[in-house]
Image (cartoon, rainbow, N blue to C red; front, top):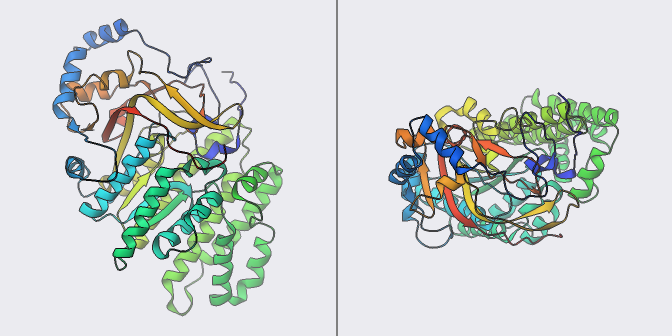
Length: 470
């Protein structure tokens, strides 16, 4: 099979659309069109009839089990989310996806659901598809008010993560800070679980710990870390890192691995187990970045390997946080990452699948869908952030049928829906699946019921207010 040459851009780690690889086996090229390739309605109806299902029976089955969603606005009452609370049950980690990386309604829904889970279900951590070290800075703001949030967002939400510099996430983080002012003994926390960057503070945390607790290792660790800590902004650093020769990146990864293993294999000094655990995790996060960036991002097989490793790393970091803080966690990411099912050849195993392996029923996946609307994304041809809009989902797509339900916005437990709905939801169909870059040459076919436990469907979405540099 002959493939087109991979096109790699700096935001490879954040978005499905960033690695523009299309093959006849897994995708259709969408030339100049922002909407998925349509499937004629007559074709869909005949297939439904052949399987003993009519479109009307599917819509009726979904309608009977769908629970109305009153709003995505984080403020105000939360009673309509009680149904979702029952669906989540006693799960410790809830993955909440988004069908675009740049729509206000998805971000506000995450804020609203996190508020509900905090107030009604005892959740205490919001975890984002963001570098570990950046998450630590946000967490210190949320816990202690350290720093200025706008400065933190401007400095940390860069490069692969710049879409997070939007008003909706600022509002969520400020809500978390306000909550902690009135609940200082039972605070909420923020974590980044991703591997795309390791800030200078991470290196300082490791070396400071070594200086205090293992001074005999300080010279060795200092030498191994020499020249590795960022001295520029996050976006510039990440771009420059991927341009280094492969041999140099491999040598850096070997150095970070040695530091991680040195600390991991040491006993905590003077019984300070917690400080030791966190120092080891900071060293591990540094190595995760270096190991991921040691792969050849111009080789399709290596990119696939990186994507699998990335999702495994994100799952491991979330599981680590759950184990060592005891917090119940709302995990925010793209639908692809919280999914159980890998419907994209470039993502051979997802974060949701890894979490299911390690947590079992303690992990629940919630996917999001929309019928039409707008989103922010960077241009895959020029890397400029702008607003894009897609029209109503085409006949034959998942969203076209989902939007025929009388409830405009709703929540659906796909595990307990009637048989007709579950059978329909299990089959892959064309689905909006928009990452941080647009246009995306891929057409995605997803069986929603295999990908997630629960679905939140919105009729229309609008673009978030982006606060960064276009």
